[in-house]
Image 1 (cartoon, rainbow, N blue to C red):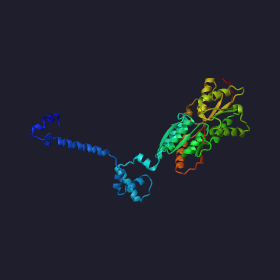
Image 2: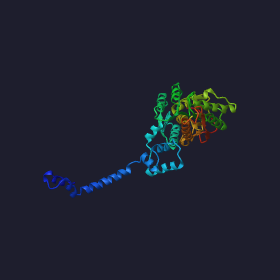
Image 3: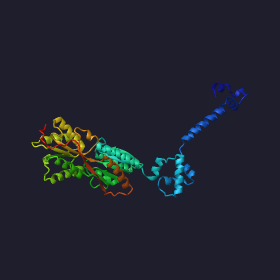
Image 4: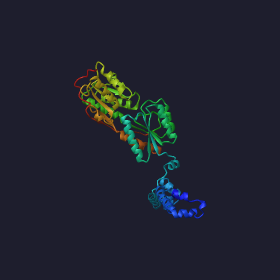
Length: 385
């Protein structure tokens, strides 16, 4: 109705009532058409409810709910009617209501020591993809390798924010982590151990990897071989050192304590360890680093010191992180599959939550040596800095 028409009407006019004004201006027809259009648009946006599905399938709401949540086994014909009705109506179960009724969050967690570490980032990517394949979300928590953060993140299980957690720790436990894991349950350990934890474990075949790396150096003629490992006492350090020493023993060699260094799995301490090794009166002709981040630290220090790899010293490592083939030189390293860690880890966790996996289960991810360009025969000994 226009403003002019409204102004022209008043009770004092007496000749026309409101209804006649509406009819004469055509407002009633226009209003009816507008309501019809809006209702049509609204109807198209309204979501079908579980009652709509039940009515269309000719069954009870309870039957629809329990069938769609996998809580009941119905006759094939009935189940088919429900599925067809849900698809025809475009019905999507309310995720929040489903989680409340099932007592599950449909979410898993992944705690990493450092999400920027290439191996951990690749494990996280594979874990997220596998969780999604099973209909789960994945929350990622970066602990910065601090036990306080790990303990706090594990509480998400008790708070029902996640149904279970994959834990990638990278430090010694003072007992707090062990207690929290055993209190919360529903945890799978990846890559490193927490001794005494009631949790399934998925580790690399570290001993075999240490054997492969060291045997390769020996096969190229090296006998004075150094090792730069991670922190003492960590599973990866202990087992890779075991493989290293076994390979030396196979050819009658003993590991020289003067050629062993241990540090955090980071570039900077590995650079310091390398320079320390090269300052010895009888330096090594080859180095086995227990992680590719240690290897990049060695490469950086060698470049600054004018030591050439592999002409002056050979280098073999462990992990095969992304872009290891793009380093200069391309890095010879033991590959452990990050994708396999993520995929198998998620499946182990879901099996553990469902009671299909024992808390004592320990599985291994296979390894293989990837030969590139960082190893050569020891034609001469490096001179150091």
